[in-house]
Length: 475
Image (cartoon, rainbow, N blue to C red; front, top):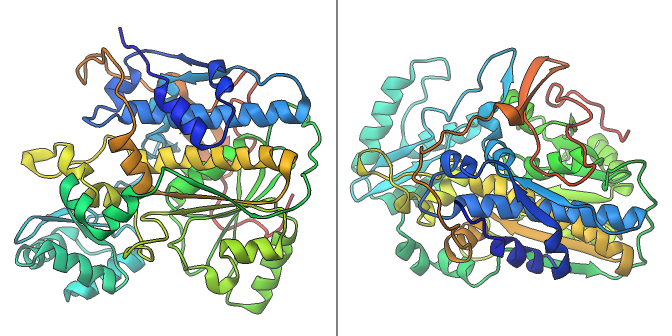
């Protein structure tokens, strides 16, 4: 029998500033082997996944109780729901069609002295990678095999660290695959190690927030959320706020289109619009939205949005009483503080890829994009807790997260469950935690949210529409 540990939940809830007594209301349920079979790993991915969902649901229950009175409802953490949700992007289907996986140039490559991992799912990242390597781009419709062979040959004669610097210097995405020790002695790894899982800060004083009782079990009802995030952690966080009743409006640049398949997964409950903040008219529209927003979440590399007045302190000055969530790959500090990154790259750089076995003895990966999903639920929890805190002490609040800090927490601070069976002992069937419904673009199959408490919503109020097609206005 698996002994599910609550230690990670208790630890993270304390970091979030929550009342330790409330963790007693968390009940762990579901098939014992679900996480073991769906998220097999040497690192405690199962335990981390369970804890991140638990604190998110607990923060939602706490806010609901604060708004309507009485004790918080009981929190239920179902291992089957967690296992399914942590691979939600793999389960989504529109009219029976499965989404595309990683692009051909997003993968591990052998180098002269080791391995590198690249990310080229977006066209502009693919273009920068190829330009940095001096490889002509035959176009997205050309056969990928010759291009993969050409890139492989190009990288085979180069050192991994030099490839990393060359591609990143061109605005692309590549990291050398490092062992845990190599990451620990790297300046960015050392900077990450000195910091906790998350950072909470009150940017300014202010009056307590007045929030009336919601109409139902929707703790975020009445909150307006500006979602300026992209793959994958930020959209998971804001998707969760939408489930809990928030009016979430995702805002993207028209020059950075999003995959509709990704939006089918993470756009549930939200609306999506495009605004070019470099244009005067669109900037004015955005400022009108900001003037009545309650929460702003950003997920671009640190500093990328500062020229639009979207640095946390600038937001606090223009919109007192705001809750700001800031998410990045590497953190806003250290030599990589201004670099782009994704879950797969963080896994490769910080030692996870070297720890988890890959095919043929090469580098591997976690069984899900667990850094993304876990950080998403943690970010949602921090935003909900900030709103709860505002009811008592007011002010403008900031919550900062980085995928690299989540990776450090996973490797360093999360205890393993006891009695976990070998992977594959009982295959996890996700069907009980999947839902099908008609949406604006066809019939959609998707994973249920794992965030659950007594009386909580079991589905989103709206299906994802076409990315970028909604009006830039609040409901």
